Image: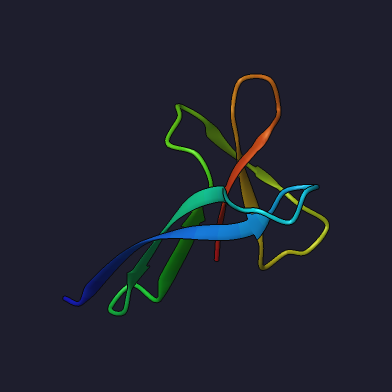
Amino acid sequence: MVIVYYNCILHGHDKEGRDSVVKEITIWYNKKGDYLEVIFEQKVGYFRETENDAVMEKVDRKGNNIGIPF
């Protein structure tokens, strides 16, 4: 089984043009299971359906999107 874990930090600029960290994301990929998940926040949550049958979304208790599994 091949599982790839990648943690990265997205960078951007604030209103004054200074570099700033925008968001840290985690990417999980399981080649054998053909499963990809992009995680925006490490929180307790659950999966819910979207309009696209191929895509679910992971949300926290308040309904905020915290990840996308494919």
